[in-house]
Image (cartoon, rainbow, N blue to C red; front, side):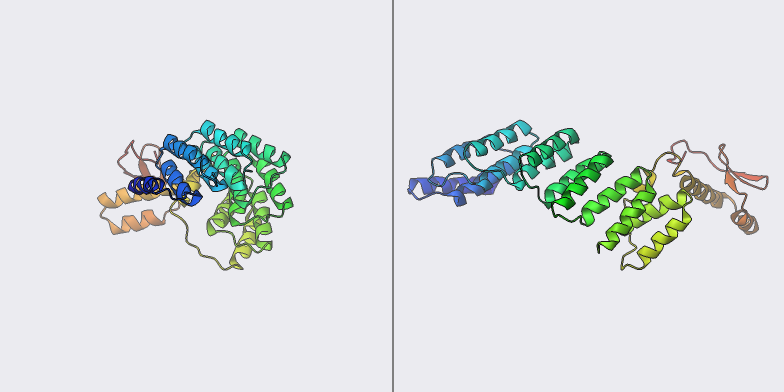
Length: 310
């Protein structure tokens, strides 16, 4: 990182000129070295910082903790935490959030929750971003009970749930096939003045209709239609649908398989009347042997074992 090298050269020039060096000089260099993965050099620069009148600040320690966590060195980050506390610098929520980022990234839910409970017991007050990270970690790990507990504690501490935390919780309920509960949370979100994402609505709607809860799905649609919203879905929506529990995507796959089979038929069948008849037949199915059957008449469709629907 060329800018760090230039900054270090300027630092040496300032030292030779006996100019005063403060945190405004050291902090950017320490952060730049850390971002470049040069953590030992960053620690060496920290040692030089100690001889200054001002000494390291909370920003200095947070920068080191951040970059050690980003590098996956939790032990090194913990040493920075102890160092700052021994020098009378109290960690802030930002300090601990770097640790929660690490735990979330590496699927270390148990370690993350241990830290969270220790902070609560010690009287620390997590900020909104802390709760975002914890909820993300719990929801991705499928820990519904803990997620509900943390959500409740967040509210008790005066931090109202926002679109991000409520979306993560509702999507977890959908993944657990708890669509009635997801609908209840959806209604609560709307009553709080938050407009849920359209993908959240679609996930609940599809789940309710699959379970035969059409009346509840209609209520859901009524709620959503009363809100200003976009009906644009992300490209990952198909991945969300395909990730449903076994059996849930069978009908969807059947439809896609039939469409694929019809496409193959169109390549070989030139009789318009026959095509119309096949398209309109309610009994048209795709057999396991690769045939598209219609009232006993079958047209063989080439079977490809590499097909994602096979």
